[in-house]
Length: 258
Image 1 (cartoon, rainbow, N blue to C red):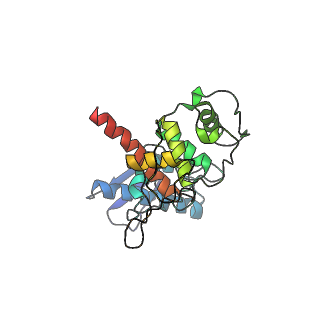
Image 2 (cartoon, rainbow, N blue to C red; image 1 turned 90 degrees about the horizontal axis):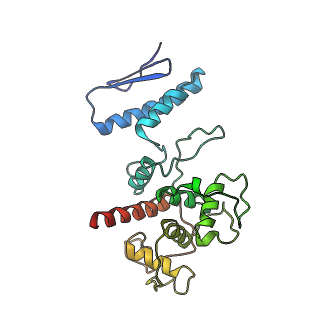
Image 3 (tube, helix red, strand yellow; image 1 turned 120 degrees about the vertical axis):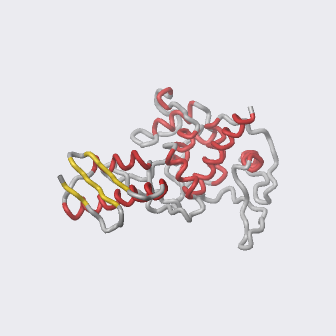
């Protein structure tokens, strides 16, 4: 047996035959998860410095807490949205070359076309196993998102009815069209109130999302509305998580009302 004792008060870990026993005394449930997260990180360091293999134990910790990201803190405005999507298994963060989770979500990184499609389909609970055959418009053989692309083409997701660069950063308006189409939303012709979306190809999607409370426009340093939406600007992974979260919440509200 290998006993690992840290210098953190009131915490002990025993690891034997790949089975984890964790004892945390006198802590709240929130602190419990903090302890589990800390243990996971300590085991990774222990692996490196002692040539040990704790993959199975770390996997157990991830089952307890769900994906935990070392680049998302409680103080971050996007933390509750990312945490919720992780708990619902819509996002899991990045993996290294061996397929192991790195513990990074990269919230400030631009979301790609393929990434937002996958997030939307997992959020809408689309069964990708029902999407058979080869893609018609996009040559994606071997791409990690191939099955999602096939589904998008077959389900009539507008952005995928023509060849598109799957790995380029998505635009803010494009994210909305993907979410609307994947969820099967009916987007009626509407004029947007934003000053920079008049005549935009996805103006109705922007107006629909704003009316539904899924998105809002930009604010200046004083918090005042600028009237701009910036439809063709890139959108990062943190902002995308909020869009997905708000769309899921919209369904929950509708079900509650009905």
